[in-house]
Amino acid sequence: MNMSAYGVPAGDRAEIIDALYRFGAGQDLRDRALFDSAFSRRAKLDFTATAKRLGGHLPLLEGRDAIGDTIFANLSGLDTTHTVSNPRITQYDGRRAELSALVEAQHLPRDDHGRHLLLKNLYTLTLTKVSDAWLIEHLRIDNVWMSGDPAVLFPRELAAA
Image (cartoon, rainbow, N blue to C red):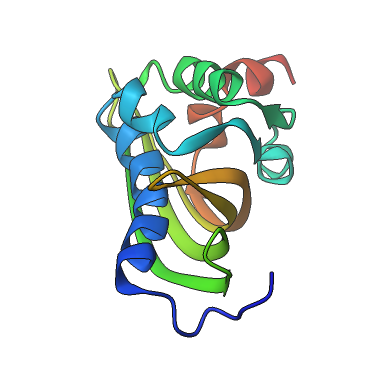
C-alpha cells in the first residue's frame, strides 16, 4: 500500500471499521446477512492459532460462504457478545486498507449461562473497497488472554481429548 493511515477520509474510516462491527454484530444478533455483508466472496478467516490454544481445531476458512457456514454452525448453541475497542487503520491507499483492533468476545451456552468463555483477541484485517463498501479480504484472530471454559466454544474436540 502506498499511503500510511494518516489522512484517511472520515467516510472511509467509518466504513472500514464498520466492516468489523458487522462481523461481530452479525454473530451477536444471529443475522447471517449482516455477518456476510462484512466479507468479500474470496475472504479468508484465520482463527487457527487461537483454536489450537483453546484445545480445538479450526482450519483456515476460505470464502464468505464457508466462513459463515462454519461460524454459524459453531455458534448455534451459544449467546455471544463482541465488543470492539482501539480500532486503528494502519495502512490505507483508497482501495485497500489494513485495520487492527482489540475485540472482547464473550461466549455463553444458550441453555447454561453459568458457564462462559471470554476471549480478548487482537484482530488484524485487510479490507478492499468494492463499489462503495469496504469488505474484509483477510481476518486473522490472535488471542491475547482468556477466562473461562474453552469447551464452551469447542465442546466436541475437548470432550474427545
